Image 1 (tube, helix red, strand yellow):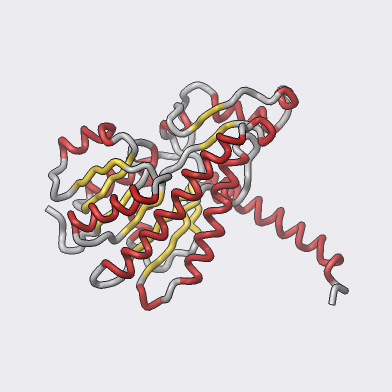
Image 2: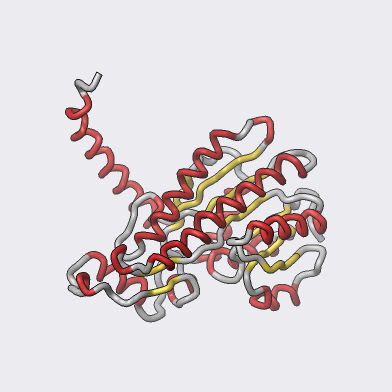
Length: 287
């Protein structure tokens, strides 16, 4: 049975990885979850373990705006409100920028950016216009590569950069009286099927100009497409942290997750700082 302080979570991309880990952890805390994914049967084991009063599993492909609207409507019909949206659905194309087919590059943007953007807009509407009392928490799943782009996943990085920009603008637009908080999560590498398998990684053939193993793109590709291995952080611990973040008021707009993410972002900040310092001379007499 849900506790008095139980929140209603709406999770996209719940089939595997950190999406599933968050669903499992949240259910274990006694909270209610609307788990959305393209193939609902992937959560049949959870459906068997948890009552319908706590878990609602819905089919959702985030590239469809009507499907997003319908999923939120079903969540409201079931639980009367949505308190936390974990905006997680996404995948990566592993390829050099030159070697990524245009259709695949557009596809990753359709899911990772436009899908996330449309979920965000519906989440804000529900938080403001449906919830009584008003309010809610929008957790945007970006990545360390949404701050520090990485070779071989250029288009994936670009989708996360775009989501970060949109999320920062959205956070600045919201009326504080609505009680809505936007938090951008920037995970590093976690030991999920997205990194150890093929669930979230679509690999393409190496572009002929980038076959040299000494190139950074080749090294990054080898990491992402290597055989299953134990890499990165513990997804269960990440889910625990994400659940706590959702219940914490005084976190920043951005929350790097994992020491590798913090290290990567710190290196990027230092690189940008050096570039800005070096560029000051170009701007000194432009007025």
